[in-house]
Image (cartoon, rainbow, N blue to C red; front, side, top):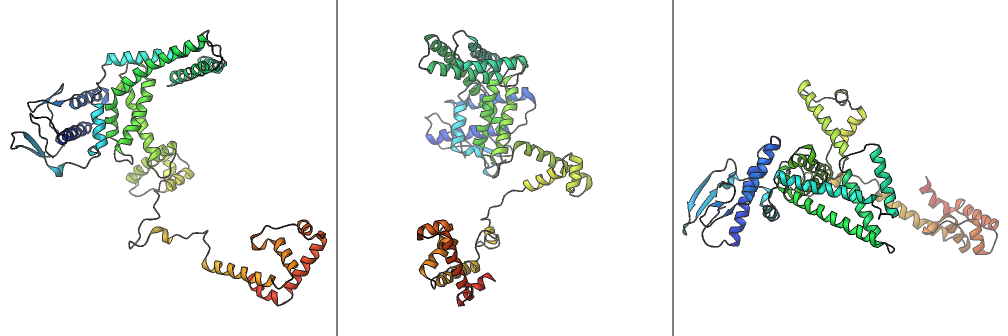
Length: 450
C-alpha cells in the first residue's frame, strides 16, 4: 500500500490511506508491553500525538508529536518518487499481518476518538470532584424538608443502616445517587406534587446533568486506554469491536467509582475495571454454552496444577493426583474435565464430504420402521375385528378404551349416552370382550400381544 502526500487537496482514497496509516502505527504502539502506570500514561500520550497528527502542505506530518514511520516490526520499506513528484512509502506486504484494524468500522472509530483530547491530572481531579460532589448532593436531597413523599422513606432507612454498619463498597455512592434521582423524578411526576417538590426535582436534574457532562468528558479522554487494553485480548473469541465495547462498559464503572482522594491517576484505577470487564465479557460470550465465572476461575486453577504436574511427573497426572495437589475435590475435578470439552457441530464432516457427524448419532425418540409398520398394521386389524361386532358393542369398546384417538370414558358417561345404567354398559363390555377372546377374531390380535 502506498501513501501519497502532495500539495493538492486529498482525494477520498488518500483519506482512507491516512486512516490505514494511523491504524497500523497504533497497532505497533499498542504491541509494546506496559510496565506500570507511568508507562501506560506515556503510551496514551504518544497515541494522542500520533492520532492527532495531520499531513501539512509540505508533505510532512505536523502535530504535537514528531514524525513517525508507520512500518510494522520486521517489515522492509523503501521510498519512491512518483511522476508528480510526491513521495510514497511501499511496505513489504508479506511482513504486514492480517489485522482487524483494516475494517471500515475500526477506521471510523479511530478517527472519532482521535478528536478527543487527553486529560491532564489536574483536569481529572476537577471532573472527579464534580462527580463526587454531585453524588453527595443527590443523596443529601433525600433529607431535604421538601422531600416528604413516601418514596424516600425506604431510601433513608437503608442509608442509615449502611452508615450504622459502616458499609462502603465501591459504587455505593453511585447507587444511592441513582435511587435518589429516580425517587425525585417519581415525586415530581405525581398529580398532587407540590411546587417545592417540582423545584427539588429540577435541582436534582441539574446536578445529574453536570455529573453526566463530567463523566462524558472523562470517558472520552480515556477511550485510547480501552483501545490499548483491548488490543492485548484479541484472538480469544471476541471481535476487536466487541472487546472495545466491553472495555468501555468497564470504563463507565471506573468513572463513576473513581476516588481522587486516594492519590492515584485515573488511568491506573480504570485499567483494572477495563481489564476485568473485558475478561468477563470473554468468559460470558465466547462459549456456545455459558459457564459461570467462578467455574472459569476454578478451571484456570485446575489447568495450572495440571501443567505443573506434567513437568514434575513427566506424564499426564490422574484426576486423583490433580485433586490432591489442587485442593479441589475429586468430584469437582471430574466436573471440570467433563465441562472443559468444546461442543462439536453435528454438521461436522466425517470421511467424505457427504457424511456428517449427526448421521452416526441415533435418535432415541425416533420410531423404528419396524415399529411404525407394526403399529399401523395393529390399527387396521383392530378396526376390522371391531367391525364384526354390533354397532353398539363397537362404540362402547372404542369409547371405553380410547380407540381411534378418542379419550377414554367412564361407564356412567357411556350409559348416559345410551340411556342405560352403567351396570348394563359393563355387561355389554364383558360380552364384547368375550366374543373377541374366544373366537377367530382373537387369533388375529393375539400375535401382537405375544
